[in-house]
Amino acid sequence: MFKAVRLNAVTYPIDNVERQELARAGVEFVEIEGQEPHEILAAAEDCDALLVVSSRVPASVIKRLTRCRVIARLGAGTDKIDIAEATRQGIVVTNVPDFCLNEQAEHALALLLAFARRLPFMTEAMRTHNWSARHHPGVHRLAGQTLGLIGFGASARAVAQRAASFGLRLLSWVRDPVKYRDIAEQLRVELVPLDRLLIESDFVSIHLPLCDETHHLLSADRLARLKPNAVLINTARGAIIDEAALVTLLQQRKIAGAALDVFEGIDVFALPGTSAAHPLLELDNVILTPHCAGSSVESSNESKVRGARNAAEVLLGIRPASIVNPTVVPRFPLPVGLIDG
Image 1 (cartoon, rainbow, N blue to C red):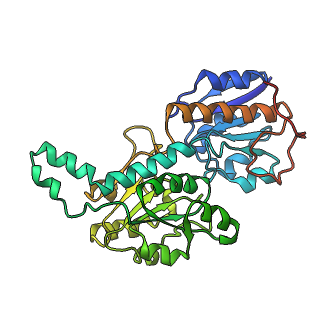
Image 2 (image 1 turned 45 degrees about the vertical axis):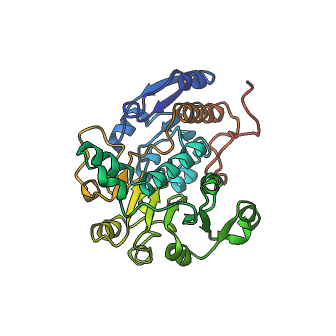
């Protein structure tokens, strides 16, 4: 019998659909929260599969997973997993890359609209009977304003498709504009250099994975290029922005505001009551949400079903649909194929 350990069982409770998928591989299922390396190893050192939602899985843990065949991320991003070490150890890493495209696009636009119409301010004004809030000088017609998309992968394209209906002018920056030229033309998105995007955009929305190249991509110098009326939206990964520099800009009112669903210095995956204070939480020119851009009943179910299915497939010797480290030489061979049914 295989042993599978599911992390984050408190912060992200397990559904029966996960158990059902893994039961197909004859799995003994162990459930823990496991946010610290010693907690993970105490339960998972002899596991055959490790399923993770939000815990960090560093090289020090991966090196000791001597039986593990697969680390299955029940979600898209894998920046918390040491992919290089897993590859060296012959461990397949899987994910569910497209499980929440609709939700993320909807949330990014919800943040944009909420800030554009100053909805948090209007709500607070209503509570104090400040009816004159209707004259807020920061509310402008959305049509004709510019939305800059940093990145032009699937999530950015999903935003572009929806944003076009609001009459927004659309810009995007990508490292390889030739690759995206045709789809950009179809969606009426102009591909431009990053500095130009930052200078011209009224709203900037980030759609990149976090890696060495994108860490603090929006540095203090780049953030300083934003217009005074600009709003920065981030539903990707917090550390893509130099958060300390952003806080300073917001405190000094150098930009209009930020709408953030991800953070560098706020651990939204911590157990309740364990998070420290943060200056972003004290500002009145931000909208903050707890990393819920990808959340819905449907996307949660899909990430759990497909994530668990990926793990089950590897245990059964079957190549799963999405492998993050395709150059890995697995500890056990994986022929091409899928589980029937």
